Structure formats: structure tokens, C-alpha cells
Length: 389
Image (cartoon, rainbow, N blue to C red; front, side):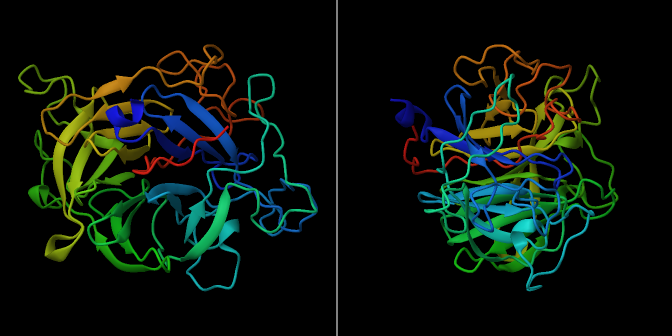
């Protein structure tokens, strides 16, 4: 009944580690769309030298923790794909075909993410950062028994501090948004990339613009930003694409009693053209929240046309692409039984390395206080992936 009601049962997301600044691994999570229940699936690590020990050194040349942040997630059938952001530890990235290992943060690639791996120790408040459990030396091969799957190929995307990904079943291409939250207006802050899913290569790139509010215009209520910053992307089965952000977009009439939409004035939902002469053009649909959160988002959809916005602090919002439709907060984002130990917006924690009490568990920095970072990409496969134990 759950699958029938929601189209898909689960979404998937990966936490970040700020390109190894935190010293902790990225983690793959499964999130049930019906109520936000989460399940930790494993760490983004590889036993490169097959010694049966996961080396968590920060050094990219020897460490076995994935440095590059895989922030864009999308699925084709039962296969889950990911693309990382461009920026690496130094805030810059390498072009493709450098003959260096992309997994350590030296290029941007398209990679398969496996939703199964060795049985890992689930983080909890007592042990928020358990060491990853490798497979046995006798059975392990590179990438085996890890949520990190094989590389499809390098994308050659050389832009952005954030990324998002979606699959267009109409033309058979993956589409990625690469965005940079450090670029000020009036400069392009987001680009749309068309990716060949068989090679991983980005075969076309388009600047994301808002023709209804050309660069240099003064935004008005309902116009959106002139050059939108977008960090969430999803594509409906009919090929209609949406992008989200809750970082910058703000209704200029915010707080004005005459504002026709006084309660939903922060962040933006945009419809994005993927093909033809208008590729990259973004049409403002509506504001999403009572105010700007200053956070990043992941975006997923189900076959019923519902949109699920996952902000990096772990809250899920549900809406659709209709301009006047409401945006509701899913207040049940938690793992079964984990009803204490955090202070998120809903008063519940997500089991994982953020399972530590504090004033802001999703943003704290420092050993033992939630330093795995935040959620990034979000995807709800149209084909339910096999249920995990």
C-alpha cells in the first residue's frame, strides 16, 4: 500500500565531509518517503590496498575515505548514479583525463552507488563515528563490499561547489546542475550539463538563466532571481524538470502586508528547460518557505508528481509543481526508536554520525559533535531497490 500511495518507497542521500576537512567519512542513507525514517547503509570508503583495514588518513594519495563529495543522485531503473561537485580540498578541481584517481577528489565523474555493502556499525549517540567495517581480505577486490560502485566515466565538468543530478526518461540522458554559492550576482551561478549515461561525459553545457528577470533587473514578487542559484534537481517521468534552492531567493515584498503570498517567501522552485533553443532557461514557479534557510537542497520526485525537498539539515518538505500549491514539512524524519538525542526542527535525530545532542547538530564543527556534515543529493528511484536487512 505504501508503494502504491507514494509511487516509490525510498529515497537515497549521501552526507558530505567537506572534502575531508571534517576527518570523517561520507555516508549513504536510505530515507522512507512516507515518514522520513532513515537507515544508514554504509560509509564511502574503499580498501585500496586490500589489507582488510580502512585507512582514514586525510592524505588523498593514501587515504581510503572518499574525498570528492557526491552531491548529485539519480537512478535509471534499479541503478543509482552519482556525480560529485567540482571543488576539491583546495577549493579547485582538475580537468578530466589527468590519469589521477577521481575518487580522491582529482576530477568529476559519473559513478554507480551500491545500496548494499558489508554490515556496518550503525552510528549512535554513544559511538557517533564508528570505524568502517571492511570485508575480509580473502574475498575483497577493489570496490567490493562497499557502497562505492564502479566509475562510468569522467564528466569533464569544471564548474561548481555544488552538484545535482536527474534522469530524463524521454531522451535517455542524465542531467546535472553544477552551481557555485560563492559567485555573486550578476554572474552565472548555475550550469546545466547533459551527461551520456554510457560514458559519463557531459556532452552539452548551458548557463541557467531566468528570461523573465534578465540579468540586471530588479526582481519583483513572483519573478525569481535573474540568474538562479540551484542545487536540487529532479526530472519527472514525462521529462519536466524542476530545480530548487533555499539559500538565496527572497521575495522582495517579504513582510509587506499587501504581499499576496506572505507565508511562503523564501527559497525558490523553478521549472528548467532541458532541450532545444531554451535549454538552461529557468521559469520561476513559487517561493518555498517562510524565509530563506541559507542551506543547500536535494530534490526527488515520485510517479504521482510529488516533489520531495531534502534540506541539508535533514528536513523533508513535500510539494508539487503547481504555483499555488502548499509546501508541507514532513515532521517525522527520524530512525525508528531514535526519538531523542538531537535538536533538529522536528526534535528528532537521524541515526548516523550526527546523532549527538547540541544546539545545531547539523552544522557543528569539531571532533564528536556532528562533523560528518549534512545531506546533499536526493533521489527516489522509480523502481524500488531491493529491501535491505
